[in-house]
Image (spheres, rainbow, N blue to C red):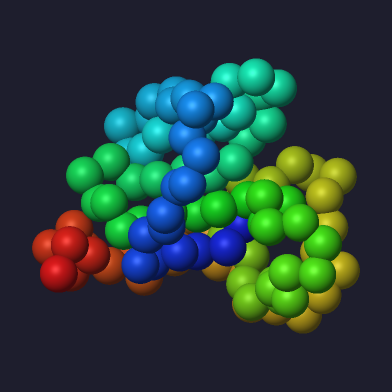
Length: 103
């Protein structure tokens, strides 16, 4: 589960932070010491981040608001809530354009 941080984030201790360009669209940030995946960010869009909710620890107060890329989920996976579900195409169509994101 990720939390969308459309306004970007501030990283205070980046000494063990490493980046991996996972696709043309974005790159993943992870701990170079233990390998934990921390977040994803869009290339060329400095304010478009998806932060893994476990990064915030217990008591973060976040709730699932929607499921995206449901057409790419494993066959055995099922959703236990009634949050809206979007295919990859639907999620991409709703994403702000690069111009809008950089304003």
